[in-house]
Length: 393
Image 1 (cartoon, one colour):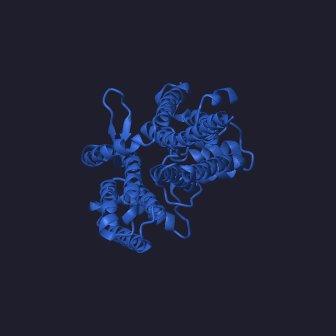
Image 2 (tube, rainbow, N blue to C red; image 1 turned 90 degrees about the vertical axis):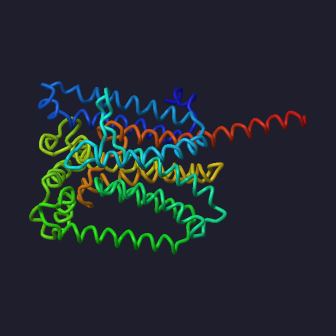
Image 3 (cartoon, helix red, strand yellow; image 1 turned 90 degrees about the horizontal axis):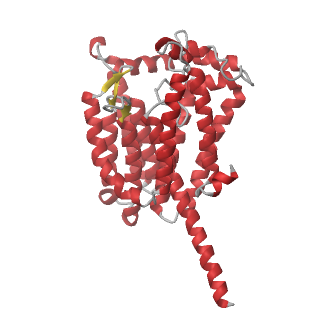
């Protein structure tokens, strides 16, 4: 490992976390796709693992390329990308493919992979906000000079995502709030924004629960999940939540061992939405806590990078990217242990998937790009100091 890391710049701890999460992902996906293999691939249990390994390889390649590119270039790249992401969200809303009752994805021609446009919009918005927060720091407390221009892209993305994916829209809105707070936007404006968001959410829920059954459409799924989550007597626990609880309970402290999960044969989507439950079943509470700690350490290291970043843009971008990854991970794990309603959010860098894994890899690559620049600057200063000493001698 030391030999490999010798030629790689950037935060070595984050690189190590990526390696560990990748190994966990391969093991968990191989174990959790057994039933899927027998159902659709004639018992070829290696099919989905090989497919996932290929997707992961391209994700790691994308991460490496993103890490090699100087992070300041992302400012211009994602400024342009925002004007592509928002129209794609609208296209997905009307012409996207229906998966699990939600129009969330576009299918990539020839390749066959589904493309979740909200993932592109989320990472694009983070970089765009980092750019605009940096540009507007001199007038960041102003309403017309800073708050309104920052809110326009946020509202455009959130509103475009909301009809098809309430949970993702809420996550994007929360990430944006965190970035605005870190960017020193006036707290009064943020408080008003939170109040407005809570009011709109309450109105949506009120309409949802009073809408005739024949007109509910996608909102029927949201209503069903909220009702079951808030059901105090828990007499009608959703099937997937019940099976996830069984997986976690039977895992105990040490787990059943790799490949010995039984709930993978019953639990819906054990390779994506509920993969954390399978990890706990096979590796126990120890394995579950270990995965949780990996994400927390990732966030801690990212915060350190943001504090050392040579520019505000790099700092804001790292905070947004790292919070996005870890926040989504916490939601996925929270759903698995029934702390949150079912959301359909994958576990970053672990769940089986296509473009969601790639965008997570891209986010890590951007964080490492900032870290790489910090390291290069240190080496440059050290070299200049040595040169200066030699001249003095």
